[in-house]
Amino acid sequence: MLALDVEFLSGVCVAGRSPSDPVPDWPPQPDRLFSALVASWAARGQAADERDALEWLEQQAPPIVYASDGEARADRTCYVPPNDVSGRSLEALPAHRARHARRFSACVPKEALISYCWQEASPHIATLSLLQKVARDTPYLGHSSSLVRCFFRQSQRPAETRPVVRATRGVYPGRFSELEEAFRRRVRPRPGQTLGLHTKTELTTPASIFGSKWYVFADAGGLCPDLRATAVAARALRGLVLSAFGAKSVPEAISGHAPDGTPSNAPHMAIFPLADLGWDWSEGRLMGMAICLPREISPQDEEAFTNALRFILRLRKKSARYDEVVLPLGSDSAWRLTREVDPKRPSFNPTRYTRESNTWATATPVVLDRHPKRWLNSTWEAQVETVISEACRNIGLPAPRQVIPCVQSAIRGSEAASAPRLAPEWVRWAMPGALEGRPMTHATLVFDEPVQGPVALGAGRFYGLGLCLPLRRHDGALRGRA
Image 1 (spheres, rainbow, N blue to C red):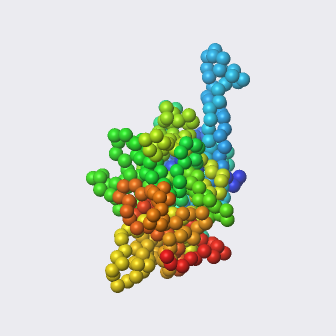
Image 2: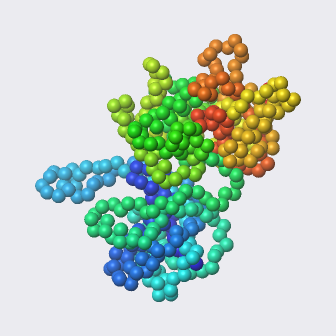
Image 3: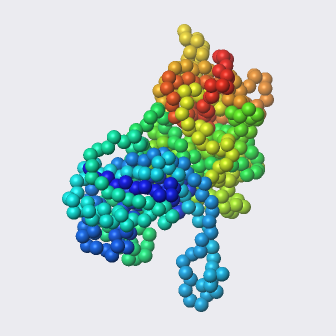
């Protein structure tokens, strides 16, 4: 087995998936690593034998990557000058040069050392020596501020404790020549070959189909809806995203519909509410929305989504700000939302919903997938427990050990699942389309083992209903059945 250890000397990896994507590329993909090695080869003098060694490497099967988890660092907007302006233009003077806004995505890993392992590769000792020379002189990976130390080694399969991460982009025979040609033409090379889904192969706990990458939008004015209008606002935001595709086909992972127009059974984009919930003095105020992509999504579908997001953020004729979108919520009302790339407020932190826990409680009520029948031999509560257990299995989680349905939520600040019969319409949960008229309930779920969120259950899970928060032990809010 051939392995390449890469140590980030500053403890930070500065690398973005694309110039406009704020999510850092962690761990760096094999095609990025190969590009760094090729750049080192060119700086060393373009030796023919070293070129042969790199062309041997590009023919190997994609490596397995061992890397720890990391946290995205808050990237501030920097203003950098463009390339030198030639001629007699006044902008050629340093004091008059323009500045363009740039954001540099960065990740702070728990462990600064990652390993790329080609399990079937067994290079000749001379080839390994040549690769070692190139790696030794590779100064950075990603941005030039990401200083690294690289070392090739040939060893047996290690007993790794770090998670295994599947690569999404790899190299292939001819990649070296492709990079060389792009440099000669002074153009940016296209990304490497798509390898598959960006998923960890070793999960320590059961995880739902919903991913941990959230695109957060905060209230910026206009008519901010009530928490009970979550599904209506989520439907409007989904429609805005789909409209960005125009006449082009929308990927199934985003639209939730198969190519023939039928509802998809595969995981797809969900939209969740961000509200003042779960704190000691929570008021249940809706503060924003978040778009959540599936945990397993192909790079092509993710790129299609980011392109759609960039498009709707650039509709300046409807908005006064570049990072703002407008949601139409009626004939004469609209809600303005701004993109929060680095959310600071605790209620906007996705980790509240994505961490592991044994006990979860609904922050928004579950829309049951089917109507419980009161005339059956089993009680209404027992039927609800069965329906919610099936809803857990529908999102990839095991059935909970205990389900406690209740009209009221165990999460502070949330609204009741149903209103009194004679209550006015505005105190009821607004249900769009096919969700109208379905039974709803809050619930507390207890699992035998910790499960990883996000947890969203029921027929309205893709519209922010049935969204759960972990319930802390000292909350003492396990209420009785309705």
